[in-house]
Amino acid sequence: MASLSNILPLSLSGVEFKADGIRLIKDVSTEFKAGSLSFVLGPNGAGKSLLLRLCHGLIAPTAGRIDWQGPAAEDPQPHQAMVFQRPVMLRRSVYANLDHALCQRNVDKAERTRRIEDMLERTGLSRLASVSARRLSGGEQQRLAVARAWTLQPEVLFLDEPTAALDPSATHAIEEFIQAIRASGTTIIMSSHDMAQAKRLAEDVLFMYRGRLIERSPAQKFFEKPESDLARSFLQGDLLWWKRKELTPPDDG
Image (cartoon, rainbow, N blue to C red; front, side):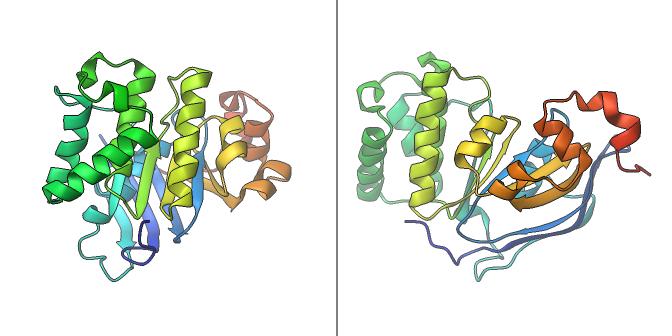
């Protein structure tokens, strides 16, 4: 079980990110506490993936602050992991992909073996342990990516649209893993534009549009009675670019 007190809470204060002079993340302030499954929702281009990469530390904000506030805040990386929409598979076996991740965290051999065997069984990958990871199907590769992150026993797991390219069967398998990871005590922050999936899994929702955090609320409240016009339009399935002039908040960047 992941510890709930090493690096959380995570605080964002006035966070912005610019690329080529264009503000892609705009004045985001929020906080993530231990023990939640948060969904970052919004249409394509809303800034969901960028926000997760900023939180994980893959890129630095161009303005504002991102602060881990737990006792291990000075070195948060060993306590977190991230799974991408298109995972990178090492050119080696399924087993070796898991082993490599644990070696990078300096886990001793006996513990690595125990964790890997347990994870292969939990994720149904035991029969594929000796198969090259790059020969797996898309769904199998994503299961391996989740297993690789899960075996690190992170306190915080970032998931960037992990089922976006998967069929319903593979999506169901990944969602079962997500629920098991959450039950183990890991805090999950996940991006998606899949409202049905968010209704199944989310405990709270952050709704983004054009780089701004428009609304945040408990999942049930968000889906039953969103506060903003943009969120209501998104939930109704509207093409939000049609409503850009009437609904978009002012952008001075």
